[in-house]
Amino acid sequence: MATEVETWTTVQKHDGVLSFDDDVDMDHPYCDEDEAALEAEVNGNWTPQEKALHEARLKAKAKRRVRKSSSRSESLSESLSGELADGDSHSPKGKVPVPNDRKSRTGKGRGLPKKGGAGGKGVWGAAGMVYEVEEPDVKDPNYDEIAQGDTVYATVVPELDERELEKTVNPIVQEYFEHGDTKEVQMLLRELNLGHHKYEFSSLAVSLSLEGKASHRELTSRLLRDLVGKELSESDMARAFDKILKELPDLMLDTPEAPQMLGQFIARAIADHALPMAFLDRYKGKVDCDHARAALDRAAVLLSMKREMVRLDNVWGVGGGLRPVKHLVKEMNLLLKEYLVSGEVKEAERCLRDLEVPHFHHELVYEAVVMVLESKGDTAVKMMCKLLQAFWKIGLVTVDQMNRGFQRVYDELPEINLDVPHAHSIMESFTDLCYQESVITKQLRDSCPSRGRKRFVSEGDGGLIKN
Image (tube, rainbow, N blue to C red; front, side):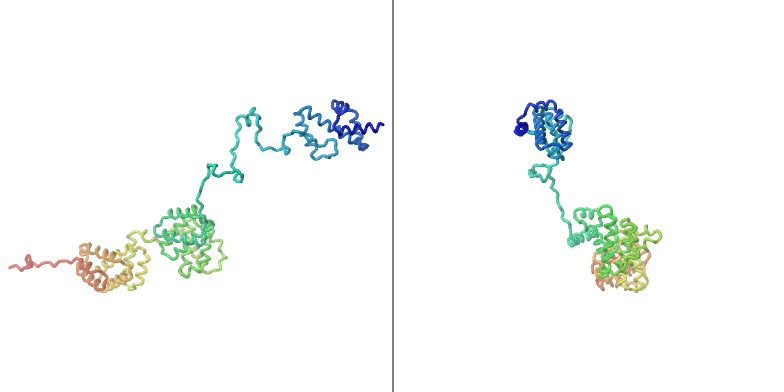
């Protein structure tokens, strides 16, 4: 009979009906019966029926606590969930779900303040709290680019490849050889997207200058000096000269003097701090090409000479129009004197071209005519006429320059006559010879001033002899 009563009590408790003993247990949660049950659990003497009865009592206690206080239920649910997260489901302290609980199960919110929080009812957050500006998420499905209002449109310049780079850079360098303005080149480079081919601009500029004049090489050295630190770095410059050293055998096909010129370029770049000082050191004992070794040796010699770091500013000489007029006049005088001694027209032509002053060739004509007037004998007259005729045929001296040179002599002939009494007669004979050789025009020959014959004492006005 006792067994049937005990079974009925257990079943009823599974159905959710509470007995008077449960109320007593709620008022006195730790009674002697519970202590005995705990001792029995520890000793392992629980029967299955006793174990089920004990679990039902724990569930009933948890339900009564939820109903009794909603505030206490939150703290109780947190403690029970924390304690039973890793616990055994058969233990007395199992996980108990809390009905109508809106608290996040993850324990993490969105990080925003609760409505009605520290600021009071209807206020978001505490007074004086400053929130960071939320950046719009581009990956958000509701993201609208037009609605943002801060859209900035920028021009995207595609990166140039090797072929396009050469087609673009060559005109820039050729124009720079004409105007010599490094700032304009910097402005044009900023508009280009050279990318990782930036160093090739320096190598192309040096290669083009090797085929040009000494003034072009001087302008290229100045350009490299001005670009370092602004558009190019020392590593870019070193990489450019590495490429030129590898291409040196091909460059020698068009420019046999390329190794010596490249050595001067390297020395000038190091002196201008466009190349690092250790550029030559990393090539010692590592160069197999004879031409590259000759270029590096030339640079080392120029840098090792006493005070040569200062003199390297003129390693290419003073180019063309940058030279003083007195220096150009002196060079032309030496050119004409050497020609009178050697008689080589080709050498005189080469020296005149090396001066790179085509706009100043009228000075050569002037100096040649004056030298004829001051010379003795007919040898200088014939040789100068031959030289002017050669320059006229190849177009080295134009019609305007020839006319201007002779006209300057015509204007100064009275002063020259003070030192050379027979200047007028020599001038007339020289102009006649030049006209016969098609060096000057008939109009220029006719404009030659002639000195009038002095009248005798016996001659009166009009050429009549006085009685």
